Length: 266
Image (cartoon, rainbow, N blue to C red):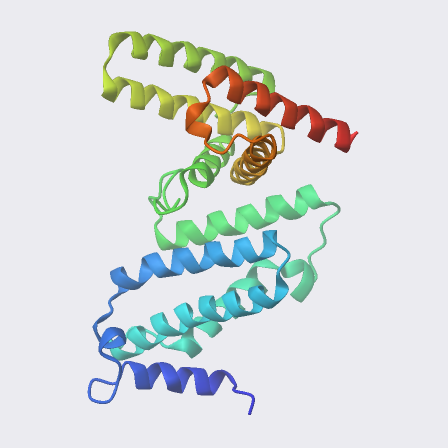
């Protein structure tokens, strides 16, 4: 038997049934489910990065279940149901794609992106005519993603560097301020300045056309891969315990791994 969406909705309703449902599902709230939704979204992204499409199918099912869970709670509270969610997203996609579902023409990708942003801006104004430029950028977003979105919003009203050069100079300026804060031994000031440094680094990435979140994820994967190679090299050389090595020895092993990787890439 192959289950369909209606069966999934019925399963969710049964899980939430106050008399015959699952105690865990019954007691969940909007706030308690939200962290699971974020986790499931990351697991989808991880499956894509790993090229594991069998796992991706499973993770997409988990993510869909999150939407169904919210729909059931919305139905219970008389707020909305799954059909209303589908209706809303269909209307939004049709409205935001007049070049597909209407007769609007865009001559290039830049014009298409500008039209998309204008429509989103119009929608935000409809929700709140007094909305400020940075309103509506979700606080729950990963910090690098949110920094990028805040900067793009500010750039739309002209608050931006003309090119990446200015942003790079700002990184150097912020690094100097971190060093100054470190000399003061003020932990709060250090955290504040490190935040400014990271925000400036996101600006550089954005102006270079690089996704800062993706770049850092790539950097994380690279570090993980190289460190595992370092461990393997040292084990092969008879060094079982990295704790027994000093920093110079570890750095030499690290540089050998980097050199070998670059040679192989070349």
